[in-house]
Length: 123
Image (cartoon, rainbow, N blue to C red; front, side, top):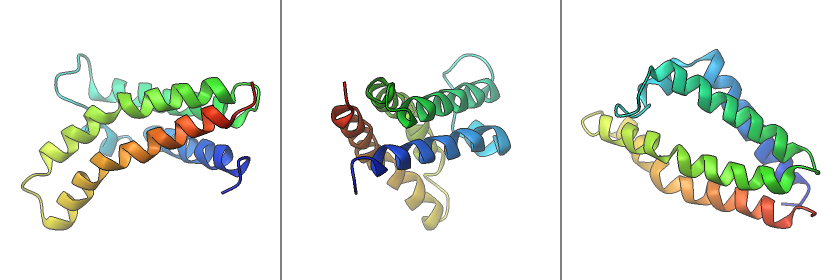
């Protein structure tokens, strides 16, 4: 993957996820950790805004370095939602359980991708 395509692809993934938080929020509401204060919908919208902001920062060469850093932090920050999903799916049918459990280790390559975008961005 070329160094210019990787940030654009990451920005596209983030933008798509961010839009989905507003267009179809229920699945995101369901994985908001129960211990967070306030409504699940508020957290869903907040994380959608964060993803859209990270997408914009990664997309623009001038802010890409910071965007990569913020995106790596975002991927770490949403990890508790993946843990919540895995916990909630422990008695679901195998295909649903497999998806929920597969999300856990997939956060590592996402963090690495964002960090790589940050590292290769021009200063």
